Each structure stands twice: as C-alpha cells, then as structure tokens.
Length: 578
Image 1 (cartoon, one colour):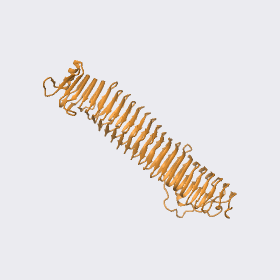
Image 2 (tube, rainbow, N blue to C red):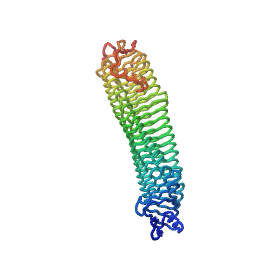
Image 3 (cartoon, helix red, strand yellow):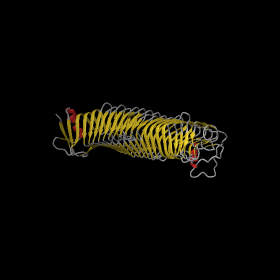
Image 4 (cartoon, rainbow, N blue to C red):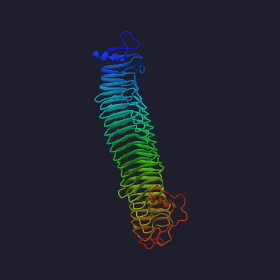
C-alpha cells in the first residue's frame, strides 16, 4: 500500500514543512510513497530513495524547487516526478541526477543556465514525458531512456546527448536553438521519430564514433550546419525526413554508412546530400530542391549509392571530386543554373543508369586524369544551352543508350579525353552532334545525329574518330567534317537528308562503306565553324565552365581545314553517285 505524505510551507495537520523532510520520512518507512506538494517555491536539495512519487498538488508549474549551488534532485530507486519546476544557477552540477534505478519526469520543467539539466547515469533508465528543458543538456551516459512530447530550448551546447553505450528513444519532441547539436549520439544507439528541430548551431542530429542512429518523420529547419550528420563509422537510417534551410541536408564522413530513404532536402545553402572522407551511404527516393551549390556531392573518397533521386533547382546536380566515386540509378534532374552531372579531378568515378536531365545548361562534364572515369547507361538530356556531354583532360567515359535532344552541342571531347559511345542519339541541336579536338578520341557505334542546324560530327587538331554504323541526317552544313591532322574512319556510315554536303575532309580519314547522296568534298575553302561551336570548344579548353566563354558572334576569326587527299569509294565533289 502506498503511503501518502503532504508538504506545505504554511503548515497544517500532519503536513511536512519541506520536501526533503517528507522524503526522509518516506525513506525511513521503506514503503512506496506519494508526496503531494502544495504550491510554492522551495529552496532545497532533494534526495529521493526507493519507490517515490513527487506530485505538484495544484498542477504543473505550481511547485518550484530551486538550489543556487549543487544538484536539485538526486534519485536512487524508482522515482516519478509530476508537475514540478526544478532549477539551479550552478553549471558545475546537474539539476537532476539519476544515480540508480529509474526516473520518470512528467510535465516537469528543468531550468539551468548551462551544463547538464538532467543526467541518467550508467545502468539507469530515465523517461521524460510532456516536459520542458531550458538551456541545459539532457545527458544519457551508458543508460536507457525514453523522451516523449518534450521541448528543449536554447541549450548551451547539445540539447540531448546520448553517449557511452546508452540506448534512447526520442519521439514527438521539439528541439530549438541549441548552440551545438539538437541530438548527439556518440558510441551509442538512438532513434528520433516525429520530432521538430530548428535553429541549431551545428548539425541538428549528429551520430559519431560508431553510433547507430535511426531517424523517421522528422522536420528540420534553419540549421547552421547539417540537418543530419553521420561521422566516424556511424551507421543508421533516415526515413521521411524534411530538411529546409540547412547548410547541408544530410552528410556522411569519415567512414560512416547511413541509409536515407524518402526524404526531402530543400533550400540547402551548400549541398543537399554530402558524402566525403571515405564515407558511403545509400540514398533512395530522395528529393533535393534548390540546393544553392550542389544537389548530391561526393568528395575526398566518398562512395554513395543514390537511387530514385530527384534534383530540381539550384546550381549543380551531382558532383564527384577528389578521388570520390558514386553509383546513381533512376535520377531525375531539372532546371539547374549550371551542370547536371559533374566528375572532376584525379581518379574520380561515376556510374549512372536511367538518368533524365531537363533544362540544364550542361548535361555531363568530366575532367581529370586517366583514372577519372564515367559510365552512363540509358540517359536522356533535353533542352541544354551548352553541351549535353563535355569531356577534358585525360578522362575516359563510356555512354550507352544516351539521347541528347534540343540543345547546342551533343558531345564535346577535348584535350586527351576518350569517349566510347554505343547506341547514342543526338537530335535537334543548333551547332553539332559531336566535336572532337585536341588529341581526344571518339569511338562510337550506332551513333545517330539528326536535325543539326550545322554539323553532324567534327574532328579537329590531332583528334581521332572511329565511327561504325553512324547515321547523320538533315545536318544543315555538313554531316561529317575533319580538320587539321584529325584521323580516323567512318565504317558503314550514312549521311542523308537535305544538308549541303555529306563529308568535308582532310584526306586522313578512311571513309569505308560510306552511303550518301550528298557531296563528299575535299580541297575546297572550308566553311567556318559556327560561333556556338567555338563557344563550346573554349568552354572545354578552359577546363569546363571554369574560364571565360565567348558570347555572341565570333567576329574577324578565320577557321579552316587543311585538305590534301582522300581515300573513298563513295560520291566525290562532282556530284552524287547513284
């Protein structure tokens, strides 16, 4: 049977004048105790032992227990606190400290100027419900706990810290204005479900030092750093999160490996998804909207897998740099201000499958050494202002089943880059299907270019083009043009439609089994390249959109091919052969 104790500073029949005196009486009796406390302010330090329940008799907030120095409440046993306000002014001591057993705070307010407000120490359990925690940190150390429907406001560092093997569930709570993290999980396990976090100084949710963090149905806004961050080999999951106005929506670093699903990252000030320093991660069916810099960023050895991602608005869609890699499938990118897919710098690698890009100035940009590679399978690039694909440096890229439609240039390959293209199609471009220059290489099979307002394909300088089963139709200026010391071959290719000529060549390209009804021309004054083609060549030569670009008409410039001889068995400059 529960023993009842009444506390009233005004006195009364069988009333205790202080909470501490009632607690001492209950401990001496050794039975479960209910201590009902009359409204008022109590300057006390409390020690609760055994099976004890402390209740504010006149409702939540009516009882204030204050201690200028030291801990306000220490618990040993099974202790419940209902409706009290617990506060101190001493940052060196916990306001509430659970030393043994279990502690439940319900409709409680804990105030402290900083330091630890509530501390569940090793091998204890704390349950916090419907409570408010101001300024201090709620700390679980090698303990267990549940937080439900609580509010944490203006913590001087972390609002909730879960460390050293603790296991805690945080549900339906609001965390605002924490100077460091909203929830930090370090070498511990936690789940955060249905919570709101806003205004944190660093990552709203942080998992570090091999932590396990599960996040679901959370809303995160106005964060100075990451919305959710996994570091130091941490693991975990994020489901249906909504992050708005963070520097980075979700991040993984230093060997972390989270799984993120069905989440939306909006108006991030830098990146939506950020994976770096040998971290991995799997990101499924996520959306990145309006990232100011990069939608999905993999750098410094990062290796994410991204599936079913939709990126819209912002600057760059996907960027892979500094030796990072990534695998991307079912990606939709639209309405960016710069580039949809970018792979830069030494030894970076990207694999893309089932990609659609709409209304972005550039589609795929790759630049780097021979270890910088990209594989793109079943991709569509629509409505691009510059090039659907632009390659520079010594990179190596393979395209399979790629379509480029409605833009300026389909494929631009410069410097020493190598492109292998299979079953690719370029349609309705203003300048050309493919331009290869420098000492770059293009090896293509079943390449189709139709509806170009200028060129089908063009080789310049000492480039090499090896085209098999190519079709070039309705290219207004020329189906294929070869300049300078460009070499290669056209095997079983055809040029048709209403263009001016089939091939303008320098005699160094083997035209094996070329089928056309249009003229094949050599040793004639070459037609200048369109200014838009010069634009793209300048862009690629300047390391892909990192240097100046020519705008408008190219005036007082001469562009010519050096033609000397030709090897062919198809129509000559004298007219078509039937």
